Every structure is written in C-alpha cells, then in structure tokens.
Length: 454
Image (cartoon, rainbow, N blue to C red; front, top):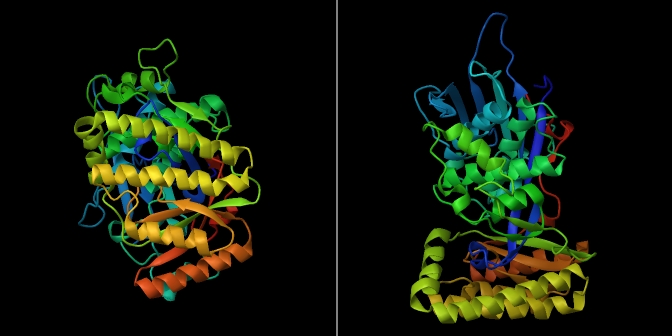
C-alpha cells in the first residue's frame, strides 16, 4: 500500500442516443464521457506508534456535514467484509453508495488479493471532490470563493449533500467507479491491479457495476458505469442474470461469489457479455458536445416504468417497430459523427428526435417535453454553430445535450441566447462548462488538489 496519496478520477456521462433502448440487449446506446469528473484521493491515516485503528474515513468537503466513518469486520462463512457506519457526534448520516462500494471493494481486495483471514486494512482517508457542474450552483457569488488563494474548480456549495440539486451528469456512477478504483489502487500491488491495463479496467468495470447495482437496489443498464470506466463508446448492456444471483454482503459465500463474478472468463457460468466499442463513438474535429442545465429535474424511475409498460403490455408490436427504426437512426448518427460528416449532423439528430417524440406520445411520457422541443428548435434555428441537440438519456425536463461548433464565438452566442430565453420564459437554463470527452477513468496528479488535502 502506497504511503503517498493515490488520486483517481472518473467522468460523468451523457447518453446522446439510445435512451430506453439501452435497457435491452438487442439495442445499443451512444454514450460519451464528460469533462466533469468525480475525484477520489486515498491516503493513509497516520497513527501514533502502538495505536491500532480499524477505520476508513470518507469525506466530501464541498458540502456541509459530509463526513462518514466506517468500521469493518470479516463476516463468517466467506461472507466478505461488512462495514458499519460509526457515529460522528450524535448523528449518523447514511450514504449507501459509499457504504456499499466500500464493502464490495474491500471484499474483492481480500479475496482476489489472496490475503489472510487475519488481514487488517491500514486505516485510510478517502476524500471526494466533484467538479462544479455536477450540481446546479447557488446564485450567491460568495459561495464561489472555495478556499482562499485556490482556483474555483471545486467550489463549496454551501449546502448539505442531500439538499444539493444534481444536474444529471451521472455522479453516482462516477463516484462508485472512482472510489472503487482508488481503493483497488491504494490497497493492491500493481501486479494484482493496474488501472492502466485492459485487464485492470475490465476488473474495475465489473466490480463497479456490481457495487452500483447493489447500492441502487436494482440491476440497471450500466451505461453510466461503462462511461465512467471507458469514456465515450457504443454500449450494449450485460445480461441482468450476471448479477442477479449474487448473495448480499455478509451472507455465506458472498466473497467467493463476488470474486468469481468479477473475474469471470468466457468459460464461466457468470460470463460478462457487455459490449464496449470505442471505434464507433467519436466526435468530429471542431465539434463539441455541450450540456445545458434546466434547473427543475425529472423523476426518471417513474418515466422508465411507464415506457416499459407501453413496450411490454400496451403495444409490444408497435414498440418493437419503433425501437428497431430508432436503433437504425441512432447508429446513423454514430456513423455521421465518427466519419466527420458535419453537414449531416442536423438531419441525423432531427430524425432521432422525431421518433423520440413519437415514443413519448405513444407511452404518455414526456421524453421530449414541449418546452424542451421549443428550446432545442430555437437554439438550432437561431444560433449559428449549433448543429442540433437532444434531451439525453431518459429525457424529461432537466438537461439538454448540444452538438456545436467548438469555438468561443459559438459558446458566447449560446450563453447570450439562453440568458434571454430564461428571462423571457421565466425558466432557469444555463450552459454548463462541461464538454464531451472520450477518456474514461484515470490516475491523477496531486497538484490540482492543493488546499483540499490535509
């Protein structure tokens, strides 16, 4: 275990094409990473000679009261490592994504690392820093001061984590991925886990998918974790059965079952059948993917249930026909972007939006609500340099993804247009600083965290 701190970051995500379809293995999603990253810095907690501390501390200093302390113990009958949240003062403030990720990562480390049952982890401090665009920012400029004398890449949000407004960039998947990567890198030798290798990324992907699904309480499509690990790609989901039979943390047999699942090969009964294609997800030179935050949010879970009910019960035949055609149009957009055919972007995006609206109408779900349609149409028609845009992922009211000319003049025109639109419509819409990015998880230098490390 290194005595110097280990820093890892993972990107957010945007599902540019393939919302809803990505839930089904017959179809794919066109997903890009984002330059907004969740950073995790792991460092050893120094103790006095002779003092033993069995504790892992996690904090997120950009938020009020965002500290978590965990004890841990080895569960009997190969149940893995169970973590127990400890009191800070008089309160316990649960964070299931952190707690489950710790249990999964520490269990995998003890099992795959072939460590003795008597092994104890050196106490560690894990610091989480989120790039500002993950949260809708407060209006008060006084909160943008962060730490005196430091840049404002990581601002203090002036609120509790549970009260912060997310912008929908995939913070939970990026957190689970970067936290898992930091723990594996911190505790395992390079010979057992190396983030820079294909094998290391595959291990991280499988373990982070398992932890993220457990923390959510459901087996999702996993495109957000895939983007966090691999960056931009065309993604075909894994079969849900890969994770369905995993015992709960602490249950007999959890540890070997998790290790077998994560490390499964083609011959294994739990074969990971995820398909990641980076060659078919590229952005043309001079084109940027930009995100707009519409500060109101959507209840994604309810929307997904309603769309799937339409697909499975209301009109299976019509739904399949629509989805097959939409898959073809999504693939066509991927081809246009990957082959640098800028003059075809607008039409390819328009064809996708047409069918997304049809799906919304048929299912009774506001996937591209009228207010978003009006804004997307106005941006495309009135701002030179905007090739087109979509309501990404599951849709709704909270975000827009735009394909734009990558220059300052276009950025300024978009900002001016959105400021005027917000004033006239009484909405709060802003262009985020974040851009689409092809790179996934990576190790980081410590210099950028000056002022944030104790």
